[in-house]
Length: 85
Image 1 (cartoon, rainbow, N blue to C red):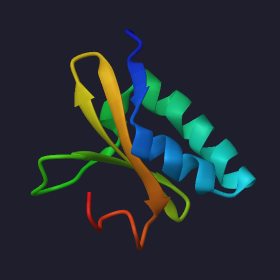
Image 2 (image 1 turned 135 degrees about the vertical axis):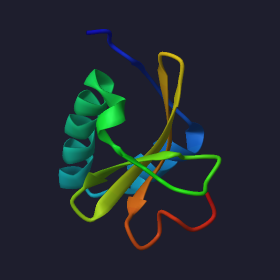
Image 3 (image 1 turned 90 degrees about the vertical axis):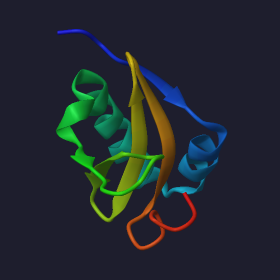
Image 4 (image 1 turned 135 degrees about the horizontal axis):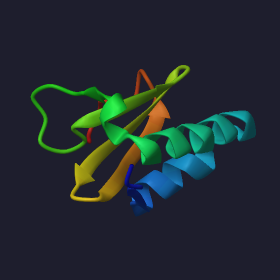
């Protein structure tokens, strides 16, 4: 099975650095799973950007799939992730 390439945006990187260390570890583990098969995530309806989401406890990773690239857009708490994407 082909490996996808992870491409974080500046906003994703900024969000990631603000997370507690234990959540950062869980997000990194989730990114390894996303890299294997990004289509396991859930598709978000009625959006053009951040069509996919991956659940990490109370946090969500929003991303798009562009060819063989996974463009990471945001990682935030579930109550904040859907605002202003």
